[in-house]
Length: 368
Image (tube, rainbow, N blue to C red; front, side, top):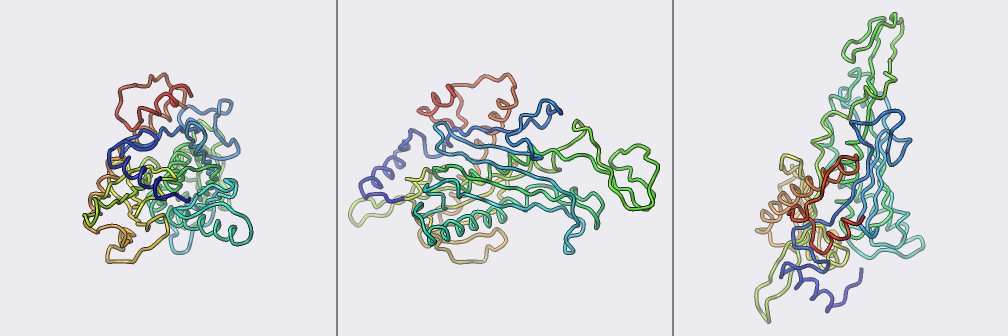
């Protein structure tokens, strides 16, 4: 997205004074709305899933439809990988082709037509998918508990994310949609019958045995359960570092913002994507260069998937990660509250809460 020097100066100065262009403070998230199927009250006749043919689904959107992301989760029983015979599988794909000319990338100009634009779009989708696989997927569920019969049958969760609209922080939005989609997923109880002996772990009744290896699926949806460990699935918080010189020849001032809009992303000298679980533990870190154009070099922090960009002082990294962890706590609380509202629970919004709702955005959220 092209930003003039005057616009960039206004955006950065607004952030430095803790009053961003949409009225939020530096560490406030926008009021995301969550739509899912209730995982604890669903019956065969009362499903409110966003996508009724999926095992689980979610929709993340903002007032005014500046961001709209769908997630579908399909569950299948498959043969496990030879490398991990005792673990289930989570596969993920991202499609942003329906978003038209919006700037969906982790940076750079969006839109346009022709072969080059399509290739650029696919590269961005591949980059988002790769980052989700790196920052979220390894911690999304308890993989060993997805094995129905270790070495023979395991659950495969196919997560498909479609970006319809996006106004900045597409990676964060996709991670939110993925987490809420997995939380709404219901897996039927399955029992393995091996060589005439029924498995008892899933509580299957007497079926007379079988001379072959079979699977018995519980047909009562009320017995279905979410994937084990899904509550530990992390969220991604992208911290944008905005930089501005302090007068002629002065030192450079840096300020961190979370949940940046497209205009703010275009002004960022660097962005750090941090995945944080509900307990506040950092699961992974990835750094992007200014304007979202990836400019990183590998260092010794390979265990966290950490890249270092020359556009951000290294001594800021600890503060940036701490900022992301603090913002993630508020984000978890906001999403939990939104999910309870979408589940139909009788909750009243608190106009005086400090959980990440900007004052200028509260009216939009309350009249939705």
